[in-house]
Length: 423
Image (cartoon, rainbow, N blue to C red; front, side, top):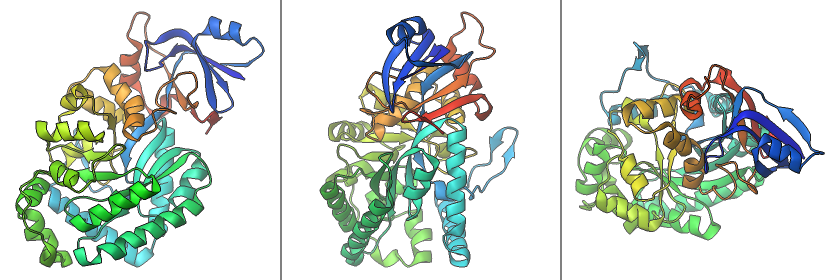
């Protein structure tokens, strides 16, 4: 038994505790409360005083693409980054760069990028993340780092006649990934990429595959207005610019006259445990569907800003009881993988209260990824995923949550723990 005490403890599900402590037994939290009370309850426990710091749940990044960590395509000026001319332009440029790098160097640069991304997450206090990947090595890389993750293996297939073969290939990918997974910290999942890269037939087959295997699903949904136009009308920039470049123009289906959310729901993709990434262009009917099906949201405000796709209706999601986690997306559409930066951006643009933002970056992410029974808050019985963040400079009477959100950086992280193990 070990007791970790600090100036503050933020359980998330209850008010901050001044002079608090967390008792950890193996990989699980045994008790949370005032330090004197916890020490009195477990007098024989090993004690560690983290001093002028806040103990909080490990941050949970609901959406990343770590293999793209070395793909940052923009520059900074006056504290803001330049935005792309259009979502499709960015997608084409990214696809070309990715294909060239893979053709010349194989998987090596993507593995290096993945390792780099993992360290960026750990260093900034992220203990768990939901990643879209195509790397067979991903489970072992995450295991080696000691982080927790849901790894959604990505599927792209627009030709309806190849849907059965692609679904079979993804089944094999998941089987191989399972053999490489060495710890309970890694959960496997499946990610049919988006309505504009996956045929309706393949969506159905992959949804059924995930159901059979009991795996979570994630999908990029309603990210841009171009996506909405494509799904509803089978027209727009995807059809005019992207598909001719890659030979997909002959596979464009008939218009659905449905929003992306309604379209995916009609195919059985939106369900309990499914994660809708971005979900910017949704209306009240879409939100009702998401609520009814138990679909969560990965909200990526800085990526949405960079790609000029709009602002997701986060308040309406939360009012409807839809789980909302915070994600950075990749460095191909963001400046950092830090959830501190993401929270501050969301605070300044939405705006949302610091306590709500910290909940989104912890328990909200756990709910969106389907892990909230085990992590996301400091509560008895949950696994000990937690970090210590310096509160040096926080004045007496100042709101500690606001202070931590304002000052949180890599340099102020004093401890990172996953399942009771410091990493």
